[in-house]
Amino acid sequence: MRESRGILTVVSGFSGAGKGTIMNELLRCYPDCYALSISATTRKPRPYEREGVEYFFKTEEEFCRMIADGELIEYAQYVGNYYGTPRDYVERQLEAGVDVILEIEIQGALKIKRDRPDTILLFITPPTAAELGRRLAGRGTESAEVIRSRLMRALSEAEGVDAYDYLVVNDVVEDCVRKVHSIIQNEHSRMHRNLSMIERLQRELEEFVQE
Ligand code: 5GP
Image 1 (cartoon, protein in one colour):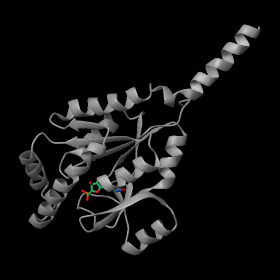
Image 2 (cartoon, rainbow, N blue to C red; image 1 turned 135 degrees about the vertical axis):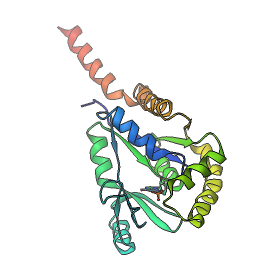
Image 3 (tube, protein in one colour; image 1 turned 60 degrees about the horizontal axis):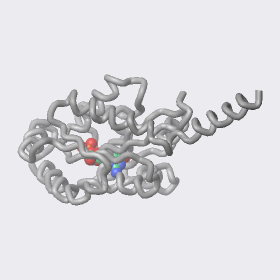
Image 4 (tube, helix red, strand yellow; image 1 turned 60 degrees about the vertical axis):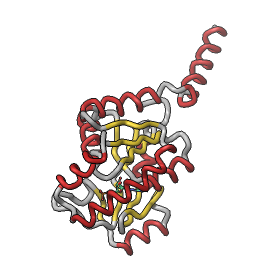
């Protein structure tokens, strides 16, 4: 277990940027380093999605109850559905020194940064808009109308990206995964995240010189 709390990283990116692939690869390559938070949503499951794996699927009523009971760190509406981050899991992992990754859209990301300024905000983008459209269409799970709404949403989200700390281009998946990993790991060396270690060293030094 680390001496300091885990680091919270929010990963966002246009729908179709390949965030899901990057997150899966990150966890596969570095299984001991990260915990991925599973969101609650009112969106209907896609054919391959399982309850409690990709999402916790909720009715609108259930979701509103979670909001009212303060069970979510943040929530947002995205193309007609609610999405939110359960508080309990995130807090427990951070407390245990584990780095937690949230894969959420921009409104939620900005809210978390306001509440917890030491969160890393990381934005993933494909190299070109044409590639984005190709990836969304290639997924084959969304109607043309939903794809269009998601591309429109991407256009408006591009306005808010300057609030993010890092931009990572997802061209070659392995390169992108390595970059994300090194960004988070380097963050552990920041002085303000290591103050408890410094305090311990000071105490040890004091004991040492008194002997
Ligand atoms: P999708 O329907 O493609 O799974 O997700 C749609 C968008 O919702 C994505 O941009 C995804 O990052 C975002 N999202 C997923 N979970 C959450 C969450 O808990 N909170 C917020 N604010 N956005 C989320």
